[in-house]
Amino acid sequence: MQFIICGDINVNYLVHNRRRKILDALLSSFNLSSTVYFPTRLQNKSATAIGNIFIDTSNNGLSDHDARLIKLNDIDIKIQNSKFKIIRRIDTYSVFDF
Image (cartoon, rainbow, N blue to C red; front, side, top):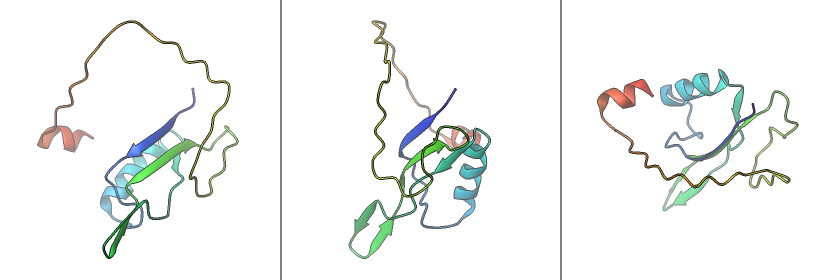
């Protein structure tokens, strides 16, 4: 199974700190690597890279260079008719568990 994770992860990849180190360790356990090392948000005099794309570079042939667009062809997406609702609990314990 291969994964691609995209989104605003609220960990600034322009800064090497404990949060980034922990996230990298977790993602590397699934062979996932960050592809974004450039500012994704510029505001006033600050720049951050909290939006990121993580890909499995072990065997999918995708580049590990700066990714701005990833286009995947021939993806079979099955639409399910079931409805569900996800509610994310955010508290001290859930943040620690993450």
